[in-house]
Length: 355
Image (cartoon, rainbow, N blue to C red; front, side, top):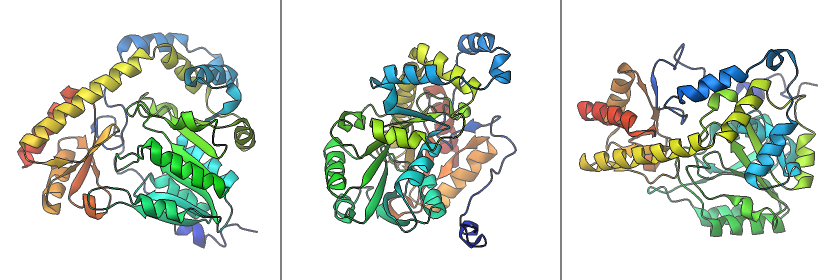
């Protein structure tokens, strides 16, 4: 029997193709990737390590489990590698929900939560923000009950850049535990935000943490991520994995970047300096930006007409950006990926021209 009932359900899911044949020739401030190139020495050394068996043999992933366990100071049976953190999200839906399960998410948040909610036919409850981008935390807590199966929280959240502090994460985990509900903390922007919910793993068996190599580590192209949780959860999630979690080239890239992690730390530092520079220049233009704990920033241009003008002018200059989420707090805003000062200088120069 067709699970989508003659495709009516899947036809309601809106997915959009890219509008450009390639983004690689442009300044990519639209997807929160690393926006400056890796050092040529790192790339050269990486290329030299590629061998025939990276193409001819199936991936050997066990060493990557050991490296990630050491990196995160957990045991290897606390980790499951995934093809990007979005596949980790899918596995959580597969394991912890069934049709009509009640799930809680933020609104707005990472788009794949909505997609998987529709695919797996869950009852999604969205918890929103006020005009100052303050989360309605009381509603979130009150919404957790015995009917709740899964809570999906991006922390920091995308596309708002906001966080849920530890004291509130603890309250969520505690109430979810008493209601036999699982909590997924999506730490895609870990690195830009130094805090992590790993500290709660021993106390809460209902906690699952997602990580990615796409953001602070800057390797969006290798499509790799991982899940951290207790041994029982990981064993169950591991049963849902594909034949091989990631490719041989992805394995090699992970090994090399973990051995040369100073590259990541340097990029985080450069991005934070770029953020400080951009915020200072925006303030001088009397433009408001929302506090962010990630590698992107929401900028309020005071009117939809001006934000649309800037959006279009930037595209003409080969600078890609993203329109802000359609909520009251961000109705006149654009979202920009942050990066090193030299790229932020280009951005602010073009914003000035449009204003």
